[in-house]
Length: 179
Length: 171
Image (cartoon, rainbow over all chains, first blue to last red; front, top):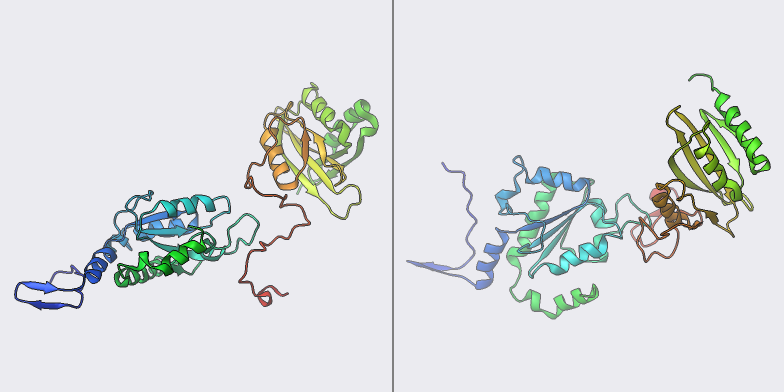
């Protein structure tokens, strides 16, 4: 009995030798099972993320085997750790350099809200500079929690309309961040 | 905890007294540290003397930091220099106090190159002006920051935080 898990096919019409479904669903299926993250790990959450990538939790199972510290070909920006105000322009630049479509996961209390570092030097949540799709609470979150966050992102990716990134709502969202 | 040995305090104090007289305001033993409070005008000369005198040889500036006591009228700010004599393993502290209306002090970068970054940090966090520093600009905070955050008049907490429940903080 093989343990290989294959992604479920989307709804569609099938017959002998053909299968018809909408382009949205086919593209969503492909995207959601090959999310390439860009880890922006600045502190302890980054260590937790290393555990997530290692053999025990193995994020590679979700099609995220390919990490790179470059905005090229990255779909998911994972911000893990305290973001100082001095780092905020760098984070924003990395986000802007990523090609559409892109998603953002904010891991841990610091990235999501500044955490315990309620001081003059720390950005009180990365949503002050870039839009965020999923917040993972915890200090630090266990790898299971991050896997849950990644699966939430997968759901969003799989169900996203192909036109969403061209919609006026999306333009309005980016305009709120001055992009 | 052994009994505190004050021989170092008295030796250094006598040397400084004969050399600088009234510029030495006080000399006390804090635990195992001799602490000398000196006048700001003479601080640089005293450090130079301690460094170059053959008997003292305090040639290493371990650290320096700024003190801020808002309640001390006319003596709100201070600078603490911690010196180390490596051959004899002596350590002492030199403190100097001054008013918040005139937070300038002569630089010691000409004596200790390491003071360059230390003084930049003190300027960054407290706004102390070091006269004669070769490159006095912020070192840790953002260049756009328009205040000196470690001064006591500024709140410890970030005022951009919007999700705080005062009940959780006993307020």
